[in-house]
Length: 182
Image (tube, rainbow, N blue to C red; front, side, top):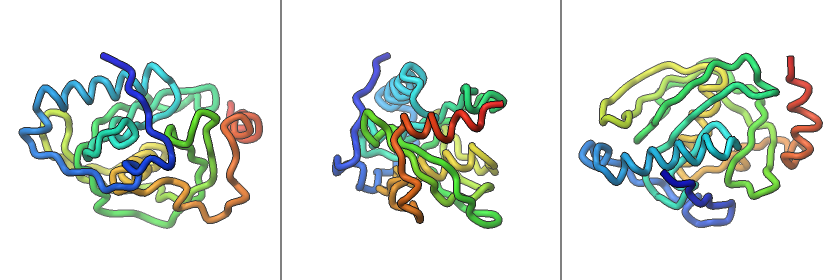
């Protein structure tokens, strides 16, 4: 397994709609190796909770999510999922402004408040080529919305309603994250 090089805002691949994968492509050695490398990149860097294939230079509809407890989210349940060809099929309630960042926002990191639904239904294919439809709430729903956006060439900055909420990772950790510690 290897740590993959991340693409940053401004790279044209981040603005392209990712190519859907067939079942044969999903179960191919190449895609299986890509999934392992993406998971390894995400977990070894400990920078984020999700990684879409375009963020590592691959224009395919594949995203790996690995949510772990952190200092500012100590009670979060670990959650791992591979989303291939995901689609949000339903949203529930209203959007809530939530803090969000992105691994493609550069080495200093960038955060802002983004409107996201607290509950969604999504359809997707898993790494074995099996199709699913499931409900997600809270942080899981937020991360899936962020990752589906990546696969559609949309960045979290496109959703920001209040530009005054933009801040670097250093400021986010100082002003926001430490306030969420229990």
